Length: 228
Image (cartoon, rainbow, N blue to C red; front, side, top):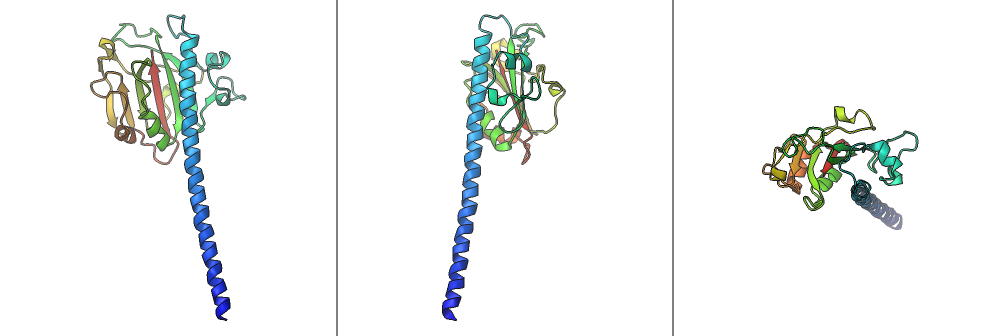
């Protein structure tokens, strides 16, 4: 009887150990997958920006740049291209990706529609990915990065209505070549920061990103990068 009791206890102990290892394994796998997705996203962003620069090296503006032209010019990695929907781009988190031309703004050029910048938006990001990507040092200034807009809301903006084009969704006005920035500090799921900004400079800190990336457990965060 005692031997039977010991066997049951031992069996329960083994099951408990298996349970702990299983939970630990799942947690480790989840962490590894999140890191993999984040690394892949960083590579995709870097690749897209570099390819756009190369393609438009001899151009005076980015006029005509959009999802459709990006796909046709093979600017974006093939794994991001939705084969069933022309011009639709998807990131590894399942969100949409938008590419388009933007404007430097009235502060520098006095022209609203100069198309001398380009925009890259990743939507559908998890909160952890949003914080990591938003606070990453993307090399403001030397890389041509003008500003970043972080949104922690799940509501789609009007500029996201089509994949063919993207309006100047950052809504940043630059003055004195970026010496000051009419941006917004991190608050209520929104932050706009720019190179040389007085209100909010780049790179965004982890603390600021955590406030701006307020999408919670849903994949509802988005980030816009604006380059000249």
